Image (tube, rainbow, N blue to C red; front, side):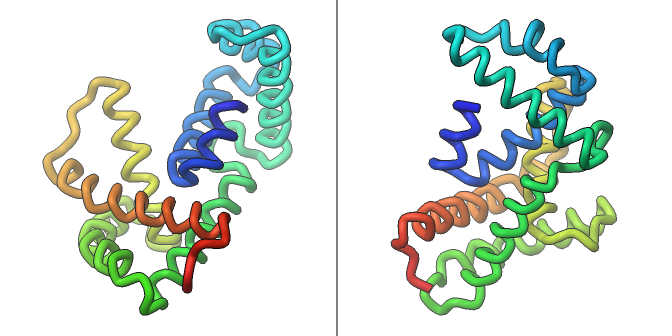
Length: 180
């Protein structure tokens, strides 16, 4: 919970990737709160209070996953909501003449986004979700020490740059500093 809170406050895009990873971690433990407490949370150097808080938070996430039918795949409604809010901000930034650097970054990433959408067949999901899927999938490949194609590596830089600008705009908007 501490990591999630810190990321949510500092970089919303990293937060969303972290939450996707956490969903997969919860699935790996069968959404079993006791196993998560005993086998996962126990590995971290937390105080007793922090260990209890983290365990309760993970148990609540497990409950949400069961209630939303996300124990095998998919993303929690709260994470889908975050992605939806990011998509709204993304579209607002693209429509604003005050953010030419964001638009330029988008158009630099767009050919890769189009390629991603055609390859994975997820034409019905927001473009930003394709961007997050690229970064998350690449992270998983790295963790598994699997090769990453040259095409994927070429897509990472412009997509990462776009999401970094979006995260910065999100932070500014939350602070009341974003001009649209």
